[in-house]
Length: 214
Ligand code: MD3
Ligand code: FE
Image: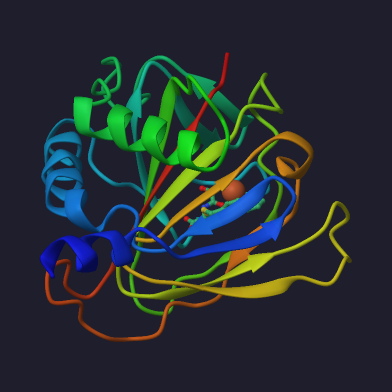
């Protein structure tokens, strides 16, 4: 019975496009390990609200793990090997991070996935992420793997132009989204997170996005 249930947790998939899918509950059994690793990252590289080149403070709080970390300031967006707040290298990606990313990528049809960056996003209730493309990576074919933890959110899965109609995709604790290849450059965003409390994660949503930058 428990085996059947465990299988069930990993069995549902929503195909969003030819090379984009949601693996429902795929990270559920490692969520505790991933959250412990987020706490370790945060201890060395605290969450912070970055400033956009336009001078706006981002609602989402961010930190990074891996060889490269995504940074934004008045000069622009870029990946940097060092945390500009303190100058140290970003905390290394943990075995649990690398394993989950590779397992999810393989499940979605992308073999031998070795990300070199993980952007960690933290959403307080009310926080949104406006429609954008991820275009600061040199590799625009390799998949991005995203893991949702904590409060649920509605993800906006758009097209290749900002004005294209976006589909709403509900994401829960433990869900993993993988997209690469022809769907890698789609516009996407997150609607404001509704107030609530998750049993394990509390009043927040944490999202891990694994990328291949170089
Ligand atoms: C499917 N993060 O950090 S991840 C980002 O939930 C970012 O924190 C969001 O967008 C978050 O850049 C979304 C899930 C995701 C992201 C981009 C996609 C799924 C996607 C692009 C195309 C298709
Ligand atoms: Fe993005």
